[in-house]
Structures are given as structure tokens and as C-alpha cells.
Length: 192
Image 1 (cartoon, one colour):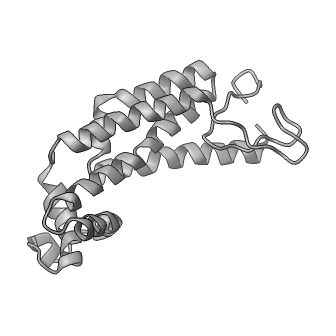
Image 2: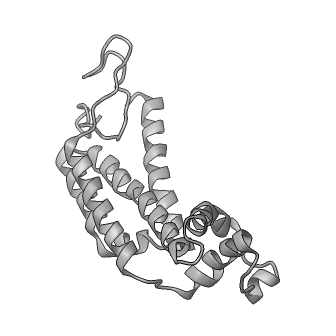
Image 3: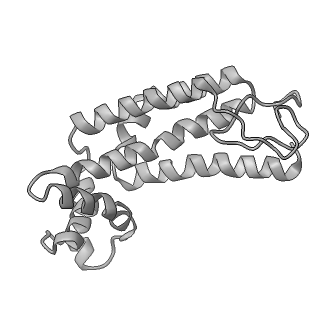
């Protein structure tokens, strides 16, 4: 429902309509995805792909604290920084990007694919920020959803750091979609 207690316009990527509500059928139907959201997700994906392919690392931590430990788990050959040796650095991010590092090394052991795939994976995950902006905007109107998702798709900070496997970037990629889902579940539970 929007702020006038009217139906929202396709505010989720895949959303079941409320039984008996607008657009629903007898057993509940899956709403179709709004084409504007699809185009905005495609725009965001192209921007993030370009950034992932054409840029190098922004912070040294991206290599030494996250990629290097994951690479070390794959190959056994790595530089152990002092904070890893002392156990004060979390293994959460290196373990989260481990599959993409492993896949990159398995495909191209002598190349740099193990450096690129984590950026591509976080870029893919950053599309959740675009969806969450859409979801928040759709609480008002479809036009608000389009504007919010467009900003999330093209804003330089969101796009540039969206492909960075760093703690700040990954926190944003987790928090915003989580908040959007939390609001949706709250609204569904309260009948709004």
C-alpha cells in the first residue's frame, strides 16, 4: 500500500500479490516484473561490469586483507599480514569471496581471473541495492521507485564501491536489501 492506502506498483522483483488484492487470482499470482526495474537493473549491471573490468583496487585492504587470504586457502601460497597472523582480522570476507577466488584460479591458474571474479560477484550482489531503492520508492509511487532505483544504479559512490570486496561495501550490499525485505515482511504482517 502506498501512503494513500492504495496499491503499490510492482514494488518487488518477485512478489506474491495478496489473495483477493489487486492483480491477484484465486490462489495468489506472481506479479510480473516491472520493465522499468529490469532496465534499471540492466543499466546498473553494465555500469558495474565496466567498473569491475576497467579499474584496479581502491584500497590495499582489498588485496592484502581479503583476496590474499582467500587465495592462500586455495593455493597455500600467500603473504600473511600481521593482523592475520595475530588473529585480529575476521575471516568472514575472505571466506565469502573464496568461491569466486577458487573458480578464477581453477579456470586460469596463471592469470588474474581470481582477482576479477570477486569484483564481478560483489558487483552482481550490488544489484540488490538497486532493488532495495526501488522497493523503498515504490512505497510511495512508481515514479518514486524509478527515481530511487535510477540513483542507486548510477550514483558514482554506489556503483564504484559496489564492486569492491571490502567490509564497507559488503556491509552496504547486505544492509540495504535486508532493510527492504524487513520492511516488506513488517508490512505483510501488519496487513498494509
